[in-house]
Structure formats: structure tokens, C-alpha cells
Amino acid sequence: MPLRGEADADGRGQLFVGSLEKGLRVLSAFLTGEAHLSLSDIREITKLDKSAAQRFAYTLHALGYLHKDPNTRRYTLSAKMLDWSVAYMQSDHLIQVAGPHLVNLHEETRQAVNLSRLVDTDVIYVIRIPARRARLLSPIVGERVPAFCTASGRAILSRRSDEEVATILDRSHLAPFTPRTICDRRSILARIAAARQVGYTIAEEECLPGELTIAAPIVNADGRSIGGVNMSMTTRDWTPERMRAELAPVLLQTVAALSNLQGSRVAAPALS
Amino acid sequence: MPLRGEADADGRGQLFVGSLEKGLRVLSAFLTGEAHLSLSDIREITKLDKSAAQRFAYTLHALGYLHKDPNTRRYTLSAKMLDWSVAYMQSDHLIQVAGPHLVNLHEETRQAVNLSRLVDTDVIYVIRIPARRARLLSPIVGERVPAFCTASGRAILSRRSDEEVATILDRSHLAPFTPRTICDRRSILARIAAARQVGYTIAEEECLPGELTIAAPIVNADGRSIGGVNMSMTTRDWTPERMRAELAPVLLQTVAALSNLQGSRVAAPALS
DNA sequence: TAGAACGTATCGCATAATGATACGAACGAA
DNA sequence: TTCGTTCGTATCATTATGCGATACGTTCTA
Image (cartoon, rainbow over all chains, first blue to last red; front, side, top):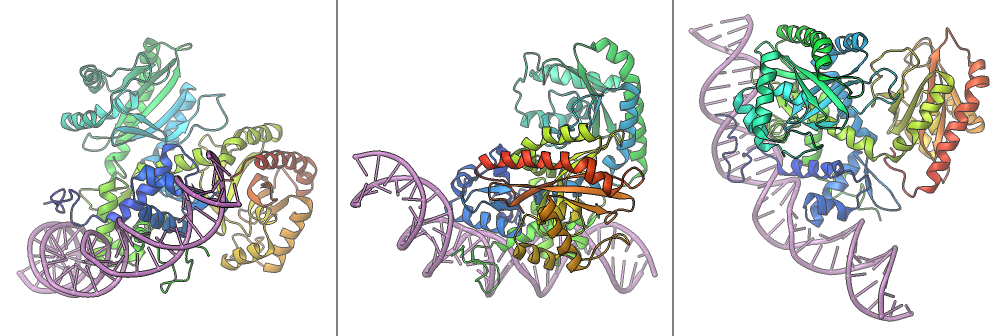
């Protein structure tokens, strides 16, 4: 009997602290992309009433998580928010051990290499190594992409149970990013099934025109996926056939090594 | 009259929501470096009683911010925490505009270049460009170092009021990292005063043996610092004198450009 | 096998969060 | 200028909500 679960009238369990959720809702208001939020903006985005928005913004400001411009009276996120990401990065065992392996993979192939984790219906990039001679500023760690239409996502799903895949696809918004995005549920499941066979999967221009991606899952001792490794390249320089021939073997080697390392550890940190 | 301020009996104002603070305290428990925390660990670190720790951990788990290992029953941070850092990165106007300037600075000097912001008594790195041929994995964004003994910190403080500097030093724990760390308050203030004159400052092995750092502040239209740019190198390859001669001019040029850009914007996001 | 430590569940109570309301300042329109 | 609106701030009675003492069951270990 798991902590009364959803058994409560309000659907969240007796132990659920509503105030905490509301406060985090206020912080989440800044995930919309708007940098400077007025109290009214917060009220509108979070659907909290005037007083609640006031109280939580006040509290977050007092704690240093929100900065308040004295002139415009608008709130912005403080750099203190980065503390959470540092703590996460340092706490995730997979990130710690994967680093050198990904660097090796990058040096052997000269392609962009990423490590990702599944959170809800999305894949979140947690390590990013840009392609040779690409931008000096590394791509953003923490970026989200939908699992259903990315190689990493489908690779991770290929080592999850059918039920889990089903519920994730249920919750996913199956909307196309490009003309080549595969949104049909049957086709998605077919791709996942194929990945289950060969151990990796390829996505062709499903998220970004001109981008090819190959990915494979890292699994724990139980065979359940705990993350994914992908490599991205352009349609100018590569074809899926060449990726299968030249990249798939070394990619599989990398995820196999990481999967074996996981076997010894008792606890795999921070899954979805 | 600012929101009743500290005027309340409990010292935090009428509007302060204690439950939110407690919930965030639970998340902060993971900043200690321990990755896997049991309920008892959380209870001990946060000084919350058994029931409170239970409720907040339950809530954070229900919201997806904490992952709970079914076997060990220990909590870990979820990758969802990275959402905050992405939101912050995208919301901070200085980070957006500074990127290309820092890349230029890096390409002209071939040295490691960082952008930092002051939060409380620390400096937080928000952009990091590693030195040529350094590690492929970028240094961690969000890392904190004390303001009092770093070039960036003293550079930022050099464009703050004396009162502000005083209160920040009051709150700082003036402990040495290396034999050369300057912990004496008079000496620190002298360095800051010097930086106020020449526009930059140098720290010699104060944080890390063998590391030299030069830094200069970015200011807004009011002349108040909103961030700092620094460059780091080794004592093997450089001397302070050469840094003054070869690096200071181009560094000052960079921060001047960024400072002017700030002039036009109304609101500078996310100060300390 | 006893005992301690831990996670989980329950429940009555009082505090602490609530939200309606009122106030004042800033802004724009007439 | 003088309205009228909007926004941020402040107050307060009400009670829902978080609180914490307590009890239960399981897992270690001694």
C-alpha cells in the first residue's frame, strides 16, 4: 500500500503539501520563456489568486531564488537556480562515469555526442559534446526533446516494458516538428520494436531538417534502460547506411561498457 | 514601506510561506554533496521533524523533482531539476549578449574565459569557455567560488557601494584556500580599491595553486556592477606583469562593450 | 530472537495559509 | 487637469491545512 497514493479526495494523497506545489508553480512560470514576470503575469500563468501569487513571490524573493527589479517590480530567476543543476550533475552517478566514455566515442568518430535521460515524456540532455570545430559555446545542458520522435527517446523506450511505453506515448503530444517526424503510433512502436532487436535506432530529420541521429540505450543490471547515448550529424555528410556501418558498432560498444558498469552499483540515480 | 519586510515577529514578514521554505530546504539537502538521501538523512540535514520530512519528500516526489529508489527507499534529485537552469540561462539577458563577446576574447587570447554573477557572498560562473586544448567536457556552469578571494568577485565588488561591500564581507567566511589566499579584511578592501582605479584586478593562486586570474566588472547604466568577466591561466606560462600588458587591455575592451550594451536595456536580470 | 532503526500511516488540534477586501500609486484617456 | 483603470501592497477574520505526537509494520543486526 504505497503511501495512500491517489486515494485521497483531492487526488494527491494526505501527505501532499499544497503550499509547496504552489510555490514551485510560481518558479515554473518562468519556464514559459518569459524572463521578466510581473505579479499579474505570475497570477495569470500559475492560475493562483492575487494573494497567493503575492505570498509565494514574496517568499521566493526572500529566499533569494527570485530577483525583483526595484523599478519595474518584475521578477526574474536568480543565478541561485543554478545550484540545483550543479547538485544534480554531481549526484548523478551515470553522468560521472559516462564522461570519459563519451569523450572516447567523440574522439573516435569526431561527431557530436550526447548523454540523455528520460523524464516524463521527454528526453533531457545531461552531457553534451559538440562536433569538432562546432560552436565554442556548448549546446545547452538540460534541453528537452520529446522521446517519441528522437533517436535517444526511442532507444530508451526500447528497453522499457510495453506498458510503460504505452503510458508514455499516451501522455505524449504526438505533434510533428518536421515533415519527416513520425507521429503515427503504430510506426513509433514499430521503430521501438526494431531498436529492441538491433540495439540502436536512427532518426532521420524528425526534429530538425538536415539532422541525422543514431542512439542506443544504457541499461542497468535488470536490463531496464536508465539513459541513452546519441550522435548527431548532417544529411550533407552522412547517410543512414554509413551510420549503421561505421557508427553503430562503436556506439554499441560504448553503451555496453556503460551498462556493465551500472551492474555493480546498487542504486541507479534519478530516473524519470 | 517595503512589504512589511523583517517587521514581523518571526522575522520574515507576514507574507512569508513557511511550507514553501521547508520544501526548498529539503531540495537544498542535496546540495551537501550526498546523492542518495534517506528520509532520516533529510530529517537530519534539514532539521525538520519526522512528519515534515515525510510530507515534503512525498510532495517533491509526487511532483517529479525527486526520484525514489524503490529498493533502497532513498531519494535522489531528478533530471527535471535541470529545467530551472535552462530557464535561468535563457532568461538572463546578459548571458545572451555576452556569449559572442566572450568567444572573441577567447579567440584573441586563447585563454579560458568565464562570465560570472554575484549571488550572496559568492560568485557563480554562468558562461565557461575552457582554454584551448583543455578538457573536452566543459567546466561546470553554476559553480560557486567566494567573492572575497577571487578576481571576479573583487572585480564585481569594485563597482558596488562601500556599504554593500561591507555587508558582503561581513557575511563571508574569510577562510584561506591556499597559502596565498588574502583573508585579511584590510588587504581585501585595498585590492578592491585598486580595482576601482584601474578597472580590473588580478588574483594570484588564491583559490588554486598555480592559477592566475584576471577579471573586470560589467556595469549597467548606473555604473553598478552586474557581472564579471575573468580569464584564467597557469603560473607556468604567465606572470602578472605580462597579464597586465597583454590581457588587461583586451579584457577592458570586452567589459566596456558589454557595459554599454547594458545601458540601453531597462531591466538587468537576476542580480544577487 | 530480541531490539533498534527506519519508513509508513493515522488523527485531533492549533497554527498558518487563505482569499476577500481595501488602500494607494502609476498610468492613460478624455 | 480629472476621471477611471490597473497594478502592487497591506490587512484581517476564517478555517482549511499543515503539524507533530503516536502507532504500526518491516528490515537490519547483534
